[in-house]
Length: 112
Image 1 (tube, rainbow, N blue to C red):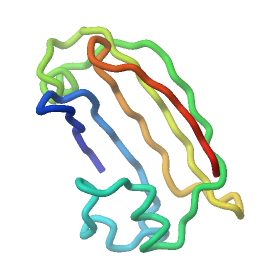
Image 2 (image 1 turned 90 degrees about the vertical axis):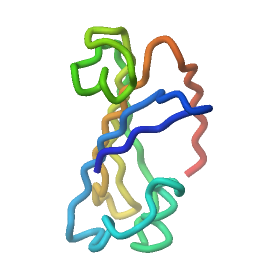
Image 3 (image 1 turned 135 degrees about the vertical axis):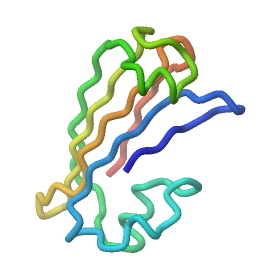
């Protein structure tokens, strides 16, 4: 799944999510633009987040990401990689999110 997120009409992040098809059949038919993916997983597929492993690192944008974010390839960015699993330990989402380096401030709070 490929999504571009914007704030006030300016694209700020590119999301790539990889989901095992057998765990979320018909996911491509759900509204994942106006709804958080985690809410769709829990409500429609019974996949509730229990454990999230994240890595954040600096990077630069590749040409496709630069095009999606309306800045040049090679521009500074932050890359967040997630592995998300449920209570039984089944991983149901792998994701990478690339944030424009000049437009974001990240803050993380989790209560799972």
